Image (cartoon, rainbow, N blue to C red):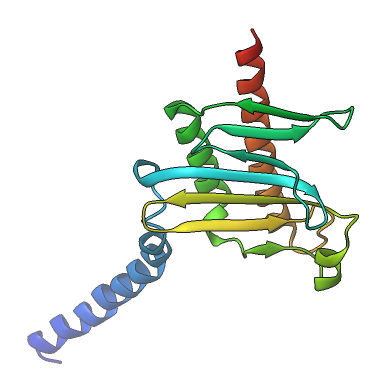
Length: 168
């Protein structure tokens, strides 16, 4: 083989696989680029039984409505600060929220069942938004269930902490 042929072979065996690997590795990151904290607009979080999600939170307005243990509607105004937004955005990144399907449920029948508890989470950014409807009785992929469950719990804990801080 000539010197030029060796150089071409070396380039093809090192550079081309590196380029292919880079494209495969960075493609999801590039696709999720609009989901950055600096482009964050609002968070919508709803939960309840069946289609009627009577408990809601919207970070754009700060409106937090939920039914307490006496079935009375409680309406509060809770604003998330920049630290909370950064925290929830980072949890969403770590849990792979952007890669989850829009519905995490066992079947269409589960979605139609009025007795099933469901959670709705929507992150709104300037150019994109991502929403996921999650039913806790999901029996599919454990990693997927763990990711959305962790996300839901972190949002709930953040709201509980903000509400408790407001009372004091």
